[in-house]
Length: 444
Image (cartoon, rainbow, N blue to C red; front, top):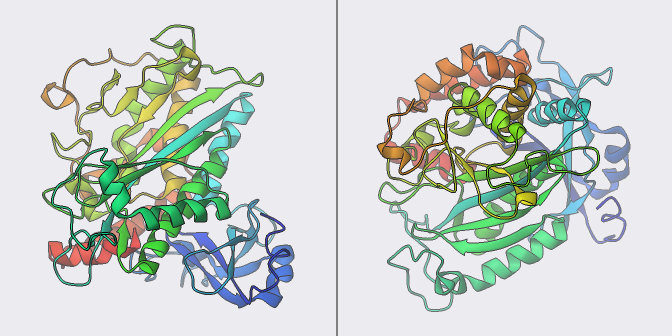
């Protein structure tokens, strides 16, 4: 993508964008004539711009603002270079960026740097994570106060059922999905299978596994931006919020991962269906960190509406082989592809923080070498299990004091994230459930 802009001289404007802690793109619009300069020299934002609440407001008690003088950070291009923004009406270039201090040190409040630090931990052991994600989202007609599925562009009718794995449901929005796949090709996002899910207007698209976790997180972040932008171009909304409808399943962002060594061997594979000791150690690390990291997997007030028994979202802290009621699932298949599926995160997460939390917890487990409890059988909802934090304040308290989280994330990011969520909690308590939906529908 580095040469994309040079091959598109008709582009008149560009955007530069970084992810804040909520996964929102924060950036600038510039004339295209500044492209060479920003690619070589970067640009500047206040450090506080990566630590805003879901409304895009400053955090009132953040030390980054008045106590620290609201200092600038240096924003430099990531490895992706320029790429198109196919959802806009005019040809436009997008340059993903991330934040550094003036002296070149990574800014520890940047979520992309948090994931980079975890990947560096793996590299120090001669290891590399292999990551794939499954992203669920809803297509929504939000033109009135009553949210509903958009009418089919083909028939003008609205679906009346979830139609799991329905080709008809996909075909009703064929033009949208065709343009979405074309746009993914243009942006070099490795989109794979699409399916219809159980909710009205709910779909899932998988991104192909790759052995570059930073790239995988970039892809997920850019994919969410793309889907939401392209849906608006088609006259409706797309939302990754965890629970837009009370009566239908929420949307998750499941992550599959394995780990390879310097020779490219999967360290979770021991030639059997059970997997290796390292797989079980990674499972134990993920389970141990789960209560404290729930705030990253369920970051918003609406997130906890998804996590109820019998809703296809996990509520108990457990693992299992080929069992979708568990928080961690070991899929069946070839031993060479032995992996862990982490099923807790909602679609509303910041992909960088989600991947850092999962991979960091797995590395904690690999380093510590502990055995997990026995895998469960049957429904996790019926088992007597330790429970995932079931509400926002409980998750905040667990995040603040969790030793496993402190091994994964720098203290500055933990502090900034807590300040953000506490401010959002204060404001959200003043809103009705429908007003909360309005806040989250387009943002997350």
